[in-house]
Image (cartoon, rainbow, N blue to C red; front, side, top):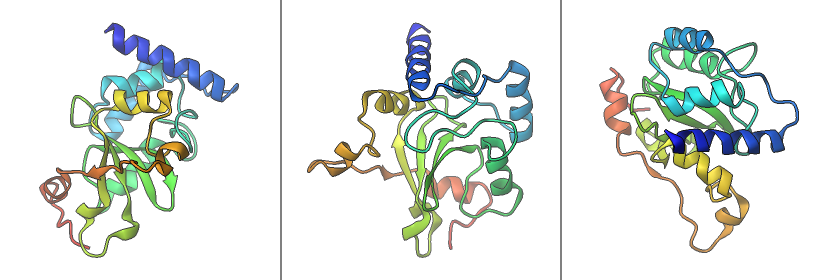
Length: 185
């Protein structure tokens, strides 16, 4: 538990350095309402970010979406992905950040460690499973890579000769077809 609290404190400190005007945190009631709307629970680290750091507006590059509220939020982004017959977005995978050019960071809320996934649809020709990559095995490690400046999105990391790109998400095909989806484009 102390690692969890230490991580949240480090994220809060970095978020305050990043923005002097962070949105207020959400309440337990806001979390419960979001989970009811989404149809699944948020992993503890993710709900902790929204409850103890801020309602979005911090993080790598383009900043985390707010969980709830007006405009573009994680809950609002997930809704259209799952209320339609989406063949490319698995259930329980919550978008948390828009990287631009159609790419998103998302948390697999069905797993206790909350892996962070990268959705990169631009190179897909016929199988949506090819658009999914595992960015980090856990949200905690993803946040730590942001705090330490070692994430793939960091220019120095991206340009290094030994740069490692996210690997394909091994569960993508099963999760897309397991959701009643074909996974074919």
